Length: 171
Image (cartoon, rainbow, N blue to C red; front, side, top):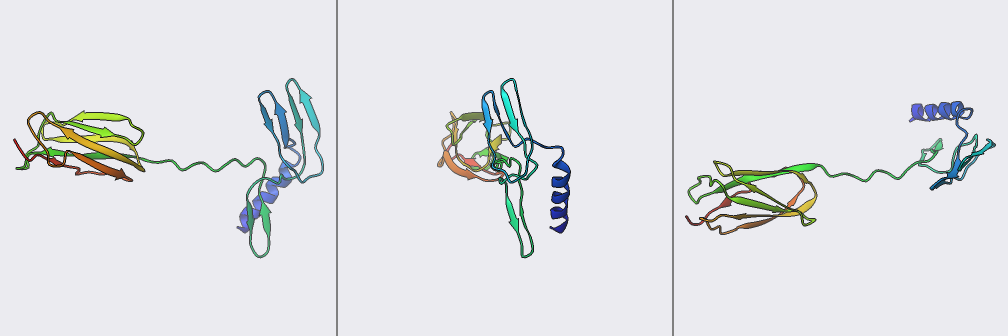
């Protein structure tokens, strides 16, 4: 923490002579910033105006401990929203005897209503890749020659899921 504080002070001192813009407007944007400071100039031209300052802005995050306080600044944006990782959902479609069933349609309905369909391979395997984690999905299976006791599964996905198997109860 002491090193970070020292680096911020050095950066602030060095940047006082280089950075002189705190408030800018023009075109289709306006940036406004409250400041603590002692100066800077004013520049304008075309469709913009820039008013400078030698001080640190009031915006930013605040860090404190028992001996010091730091209020970071210049335009701090909003924190990035967390992103969801992509996951894979996979499994098999099997007979009651445990053999894979080929050419069965497996349908995945995402939380936003998007529908994806795959067909099982030779040994009854299927998979859906690039599914956004953190949503509830519906997986269903349909086959011409087979019936399933549980043809639909509702699943809340937070990580890769395998062995979502559908087992036929008839041939």
